[in-house]
Image (cartoon, rainbow, N blue to C red; front, side, top):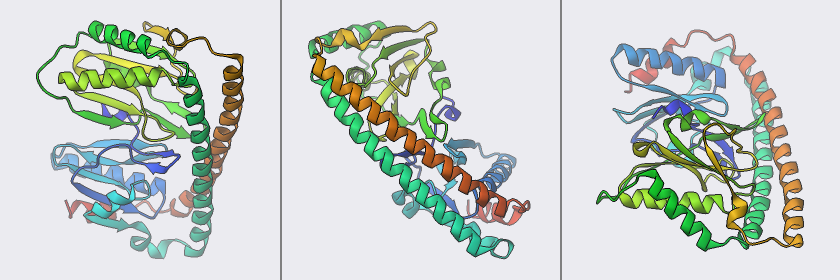
Length: 334
């Protein structure tokens, strides 16, 4: 599949998550600014191509995240967006602040970065609160789910997908297909272009749809099919959508911030999997949704302020156009 369809770094309730299993060889690039790193990554990509090393540019919520070389199992990535365990595995950690130390005012940079980090932490706090509210909504909504209907529907949907027992176990690959940005939750639907058949479950809370997605995921893996599991960009854990490339089949959970415009897809509404909700349950979910939207909007506002501080940092490093030394430093280690 085209990896440009996925995000390799996003804000979640648990901080920044890279959203994939990093390869054996990791080279992290820290410091500097996002625009300077992008210049370096593009220059490194060009050098690798000249050496006949296949590589792909990968993206995060903030633009270019780095480069991945699948054949060599090499990842060259923005150290500010890698998880701690990945930084610990790094072969090198190139610090752009040290490399370009004579070309920028350190005190001013320190102020801007502190403000950016404060906004990032504020965003994560609001996302954590929003996730707590969402978990409560799912718990309330799931209390009225009829599991017999879920089991019957998923069994029929699996048969329609054309899946058969292959006598092996498939491999699961986890990816982010959505990303939390200053403009809201961004969804890259290009990932689902590989699906000739796409089942769309319209479910405001995801209480029923994620159960369906999980059962179909397990059907596929146990039957020997590889599965791309698209995980929630809020909690960084829940599998919300799946793609089964070999069957050209996918299941999409159309939730509050993950709505899909109907094309040829047949939509199924979550109401068919619920017993009749009481008025009290409806009121509790409606109240929780108002709180959820308010918390998410605060998170988006934090990212807007964070983006403004990052813009100031980009201005500091904007005059640096020669990235030859940084490119050579990375290429020489590979």
